Length: 338
Image (cartoon, rainbow, N blue to C red; front, side, top):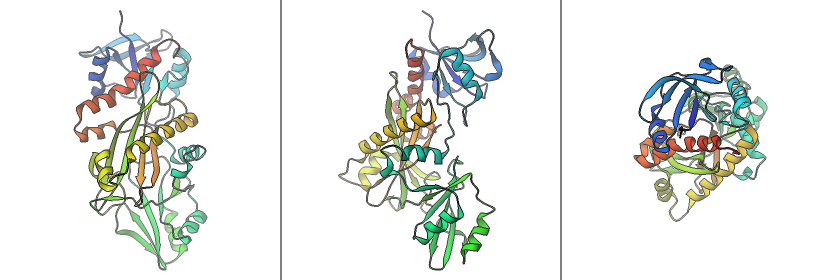
């Protein structure tokens, strides 16, 4: 019996080794599909094929399901492929999320109580928040891998701007000075979010990332969890000091509270709400912050999670599962009636 083929849709014509062992264990062929090598008339592709032992260059029929590995908005090739193989047979249509759009989608769900106040960037809103005594995060709506995240806070008559560290990047004596400086920094591609003072482990702020993936039956599962602790002088966990098992961090900081199951349940609801708003998804990660009282906040969702982070947990079986799950879901999409 011919093995099922799963397409990895990517701009790069090169192997993706992390998926090789899971593919071999599932008994499927991996097909690296790059748009320029597709022959639409013959419905075949010149591909890199992993057959369970080796990567070989070979022309094969187009697979029946695809895992989109492009980072960015929905690539045009997705629509064309789905005309051939069926609607939503290519998952993770969009992998670079607009954080404001995702926030607005979650705000329409039952997750409102877990969302920090978030707004489009605007001078009036920023000054309002500062006047209310709020500290404000200023960041790009589409993100830059944790860089370029400003913290703006007012103390006395001065307003301070930080960039990743507790030491101010700049200070201003008036709103006019602040806004003039921001003219060169931010525009409508940015957003404002109320700053959450995160709980700390050994004096370091930390967050929790839950990886949410669809399984071989098409159901969302919380597959893995980790915690990132910030550098001691930073309020940003993306530039992390350490990556640790979320369960151990939560039990140390909030002993007696069973927070991880709550985070996992919230991540499943967030994934479902995001998919309803954005289109076909098969995996995302959800970043949570917990404040000093243990209240849970959804900071952001990621459409192309860095699964390599889970290698830091030194749990080989977990890492194998993390990479196998998208293939299991793709295999499910290949089945008739899915």
